[in-house]
Length: 231
Image (cartoon, rainbow, N blue to C red):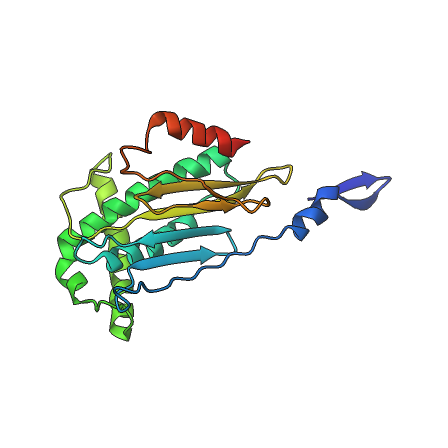
């Protein structure tokens, strides 16, 4: 937001008025997860917060699956790394599209990992809180990246190879600013994890729709939601 103007061989610097206001409206990212009362020793939530890139993700491992807590943590780590590689000057539409691709790619990578390394995944403790767990998660994350790279070479499209024994929901967002300093949030979701907006009026507004709701997830309601959020 700094403009430089050449005048008679001298350089003068002028700040756009919105530069200061943008600094005043700094965005803070914060995340916290609390164990449920029924299963306090098994928290299947995971998240990441990237304050530098203004990106975030919330993941909830599927309780009916075998190792939902592993899926949620690996998804958080994989997507955080993938977002770090995105072009920061891409348009809102492009970022939105790329986030969707990253989510599909993550699902594919998790499926490939389960097919090849399910025995290692089952060795992880339920709490994922030991040094051994940390080492195994790092190794599995590295293996996910290797597997998906090889899979891309062999297949044009992402097709989950087979049903697998773990899964997770996801809400991933990235704050984007246009040339005028106006901010937007690109969002992609899967499952029933939700994103809400707390408005100045004190109203908590739901911004996403659950994937598997026959009553809510209709094309008409999606269009109305998009229209309302674009205002």
